[in-house]
Length: 585
Image (cartoon, rainbow, N blue to C red; front, side):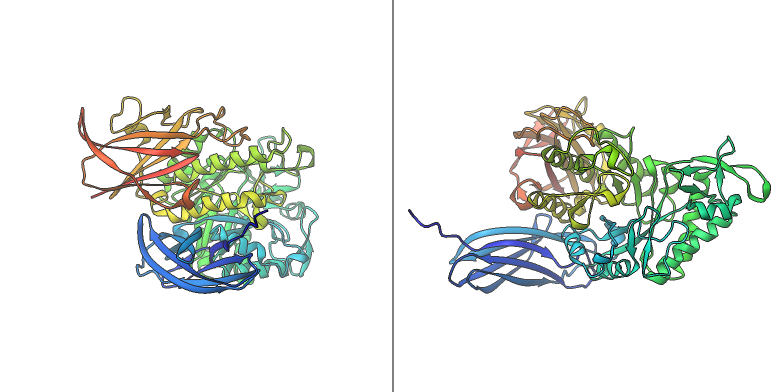
């Protein structure tokens, strides 16, 4: 029997930080395994690219010891002091032949606020005090801002005076773990935001301050789950001064970089009883003032403060999106249940706020808990099914990313958010991890084409139907994410026209939070025809589903049509998501 000779291979490649600031040296870790019984001399060839253009090459010669792993650090310093995403392509070359290839990505920014990729931490137990592997893993997904969920002693008394304490739901937590996790985030190029509910108080606090609370039209105090009491966030309310002081304490004492200001989506209006006067309070009038007061207070303590605010179900987006926040954060719930509604939430948020948009779109198919086991139930109506969950993630994330939003879903230990109580997070299995990382590498590599706030979405006005500017053939196409069709998301900005193709062929449901029985049916040889007024410098395509996300040039030709000169090109294949860009100028 002929012996099979195994070749050395790249086991992993990743940057050593989630994000880099201007003038920081980029360190790319390349891990190579040599299964052979003899040492091997090899070259590691690194190519750094910005979109389709290679901007740096490097060759490093290494000695791979027998039956061992070698970790090589390659470095690069970008010359441009402007926001950019970069791709890194690594080739392992032995004897002049490429035996393996792998890729990663990184971005360089003036501040994390230019590209806030949210992750979460929810485990702050004694055994977590010296564990930084979870945060190192999160850095491989390029998660550069981390929400510390339910880290606090009480909702109205955030910072415990003791190293070990019991939280409101009975978890035995460690303040030492919280401090160490904050430091670890900073080491890996991440910012740490403290979770803080803007109006939640314990029963004990409420009983001592009943006049600070909000009441329904029946005179009963407003509560969540009968254990959190809703307080009055009006500017004149003593609660407002109290909770902003608690936010300041979290930053000042523990070193947090800001606050994730949470709300529950209700009440939208309620009655206050300050000074014995019953007054109808409309909370959307309170929130912008509360945000402003919080920012002023925290900026007196620390530079580059981060603030996010949970607009549950997109309420009240019109007033919080323009407020002094660093991003627009929306926790998505029914009736925003369809893919197209995710797209429209992002478009609407950008119109109001001109800021990065984050969708907390929890994927219940990843939960292995049943409804009766969950503290906060969502959709636990069917048994856990790994393949359905994976397909759910791929399509939902592709839609959010292609629409120009960030998907808040991932966290510690390959954690996957399945509901709004993050402690109950599910897991990304190890054999799916590489696929998920490919998607996060992809959105960093092509962030300039996906998240630029200058992009204008023209999908409904320039493509399909009566529109002649963008035409697609050899498939069924839709401008609004119909099941069974290819969704065309078309955007333009100076210098570029972009087309995202989201494949819903063979997909029966357009509900983003439903497990999908199957992946989309692959489509080949899609013809695209585009009306062009400018000089075309090139047409390019990339996908997180193939070729490590690398850009490929597409051949194109000029053709005459009803309205003048068009270009025509063919998309060779579509699995789940293809990103096409036409460079013009």
